[in-house]
Image (cartoon, rainbow, N blue to C red; front, side):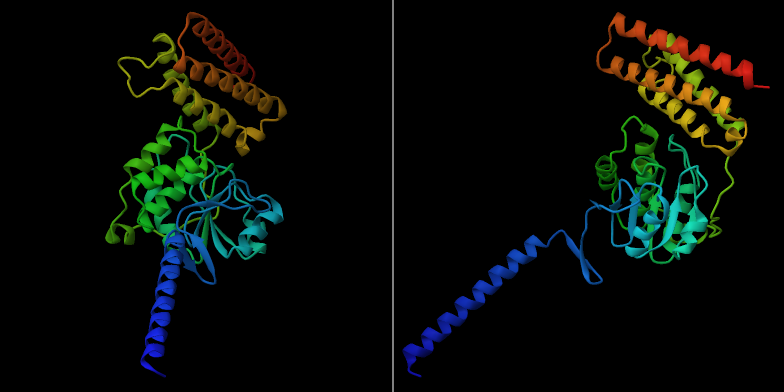
Length: 326
């Protein structure tokens, strides 16, 4: 080969290498948000999945999933297909341990409320996700509020997520910003050290002992007291209680009535009592909508509607107490 041919060959070779490098760089840029896990490429950021038997189904990392309570065989089959080995429920309902076991899945039950007061349960969630085998699915009832919050805490504790990233995840999951306590616990959570995590017990029951109807009613009474203070302040945040948000407190009350209907002790009281709770839930929902409206536009007419709604809820509560309290 003469000198000109050799030079041409070198030039073509260099050009080909440059093209490969450019293409490789483009591939690298295109795949910057993709992490390889097993034989599949998974986005590093949470992404929604379409699957049978689970609503609001997301994959947050290579092994952490979040969603609603699995529905029937289809839901548990979906999890098994995804390689999930462990389910963590933060919902108050008794987990379907039997169906999960038929699909080779185990349950850990770590329930908490909508107020975001987790206490030691925050560290227990991280510990559970650390020691449980395989991929982990974390759920509440609808997979939109408490479940995503628990998943965020796990990712902060084990996956290096920042508070900002966890907050963005809650927004993606559709967590209602009126659940201020859920956003607060994610914002203020400090991942436990290795030693602190080592000291957390690993006795995670498949079905945790839950508070009964009496405890639920005590909580409802406390929320009603907060709303009475808000009412006295013209359905605004009281000056002497700056932590009370009208929309937030009414939303918590609504959820409390809804959760109470799912308690075994409530169901044992019969259809009439459950109907009363359902009516209270509807009243609280209406009050929440009225107070949310007031937060954006305060007018005498809107306050009057909120007042009528509040009185109707109080009358319904009094009637229910007369029938069922004793």
